[in-house]
Length: 379
Image (cartoon, rainbow, N blue to C red):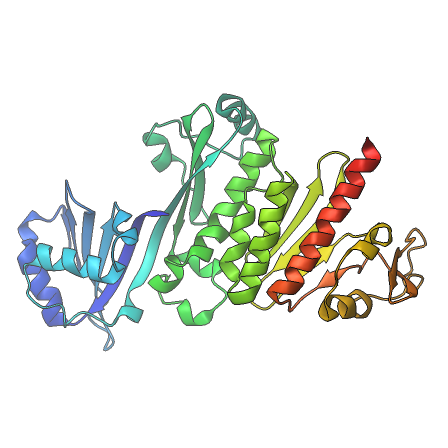
C-alpha cells in the first residue's frame, strides 16, 4: 500500500495568500520571495510548501505541495475527502470550494510498501548485499536518505523478522510518468492521483523488488499468488478461474505465475509435483480468459465422462490435427468422440474459452481424471 505521498494543487492568488496567512509565514522553516516551507511534528501532514512560479510571466501559477507521512486512511475513506478534511483543519477554513477539481490533484512523489514472506531473511540479506544492487535497510532510517538513485527512484528491503521482508519502493513524479502509458494521467510535475492510487500501479513498481528477493531466496519463481489472477476478471470468467484455482489447491498442484503489467496479463501454469507433470494453464487479462488442459491421456478415460456440446466442439475446433506443426517431437493427443478418433496437436490441445459453469465443471472433472491417471501409473 502507499505509506507516503507528496501531492500538488494549483490554486488562485487569493487562496494562496489566505493559506499563507493561516499557516503564519513567520514560522516557515525556509522562505524566499517565491516559496515558503512549513514542517509539522505530528499528524499525517509532515510538510507543506507554498510556491509561486515566475511572476514575470503572464501564465504564472500558485502551487501547494503537501507531504503526507501516513496514508493508512486510504482503506478507511475516500482519499480526496480525507485530504480535504486535513486542509480544513490546518487552514481553518469552512469551505474547500476554491481548490481545483479532483483530476487536477497531482502526485509528485510516492512510497509503496508491502510485506512479503521468505524462507530465511538473514540468509537473503547476505545474498542481496553481495549483488551490490540492493541496500537492505535493516531499520536504519539514515540509509534511506543517503542512497537515493539518480533516476528518481529506489527500492529497499527491510528485515521484518526471520521469515519476512518489508519492501519499499520510492519514486518521484518523473518515474511515475515513465511507468504510465496513458497520457491522460500525465501532468507537468507528476501524474494524477488516479494512477498513483491504482492497485495495478503498485504491482508495476513492486514486482521488480519482489521477484529479486524471491529469486535470491530460491523459494518461488514468482512473488504472486494464484488469487491475484482474479483482479482482472469479472462474471463467469472469474467464477471459472476460481473453480480451477480451488481444484489446484485440492490436489496440491504447484503454481508458476508470470505477470505483464503493461497488458495486465496473467499466466498461471499448474504442475503435479509427483510425478512432475504440467496439468493445466490459465491465461487472464481484461480482454480474455483461457484454459489449456493438458489432457494427453484423455482417450484412456473419456468413455466414462459426460461432455457438453461446447466442450466437444472446442476439443476439435481450437487446435489443429497433429502433423500440421513443424515440431517433429509432437506425438499428438489421441481422442475418440462419437466413434471417430482424432489426434490433436499437443501445442494447442486442449484450450477452452467462453465457458458456462456447466462446461467448467466438465473440464475440471477431466483434469481430475488426468491427475488420477498420472498418479496411478507412478504406483
